[in-house]
Image (cartoon, rainbow, N blue to C red; front, side, top):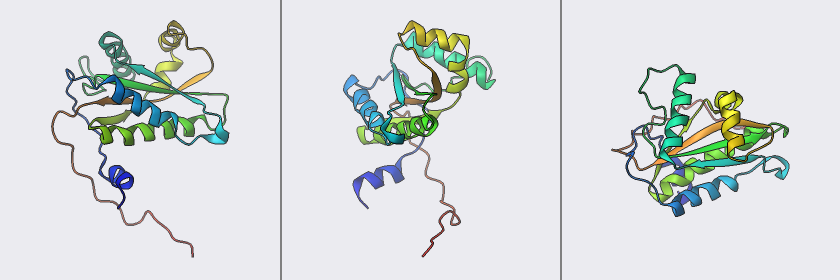
Length: 176
C-alpha cells in the first residue's frame, strides 16, 4: 500500500488532545495548504479557512459550539485541541458544501503525516448563521455569504488513538 493511502487508512479521529502543546506554525500552514488544494467544483475554490490559535478566541468558539450542541457547562467539544481550523464556503457556489467537506478531509488526512491528530467537529453552520458568528467574521474582515461547513480541531494526541472499527463488507458494488 502506498504511503498516502496508508496514511488515510491509519488516520483516526482524536478525542483527547494535549491542550498545552501547540503545533508549530509551519505544521499548521502545511495542513492549511493541504486544505486549499482540495478538489473543488468547477475550480471555484469556494472555501476559506479561519485558523484560530489564540486561546481566548478558541475558548469562545468552543463555548458557542457547546451551547449549540446542548452539552453541560464545562464540556469542550474540541477535546482540548489548541488549534481550530474553521472551514466556511461561499453559499452562492452550488458545490460549496462538497467543496468545504473536501477541504476538511484533506486537512484531516494531512495532520497525521506531521505527527498531529485531528477531528471534524460539526455545528459550524449554526455558529456562523448566528449573530455572534456573523460578528466574529465581520470583526476579522471576512465578508460575503459564508456557510460554516465544519471545524478541524488539531493538536498533539494525549494518549493512543482508538483502533479502527472493522469495515463493513456491504459497501462496495462492482459493475462489470
